Amino acid sequence: MTPSASARRPAWIRIGFVLALLGALAAAWQWSPLKEAMEPDRLSEWLGPHRIAWYGLPVTVVAFVLLGCVMVPVLAMILVTGMVFGPWLGPA
Image (cartoon, rainbow, N blue to C red; front, side):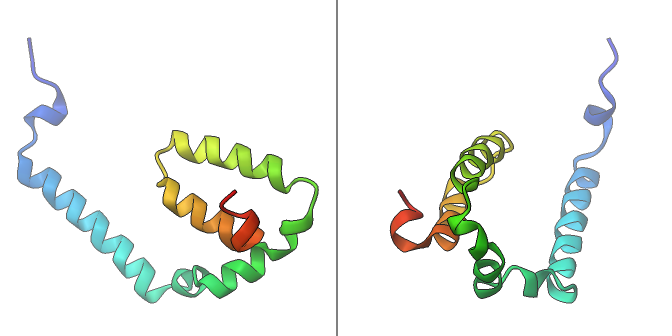
């Protein structure tokens, strides 16, 4: 049997790829508008109108399920939910 292509690659190539990817993400965060878009005040302002909409709860439930399937941290989802629905209704 022949080993798979990923098993034949040396470990340093995989490590280099991961480091390059992390470096690209850090550069995108530092020098792109992404940093300003992810500020808590801006996120709260952007998501605020959805707080009282009829679709708020169903969208939140679907988002939790889908984001949970792709392994987004639950704490981050709770934080965003608290920002959208406020400090009392958000965590509930």
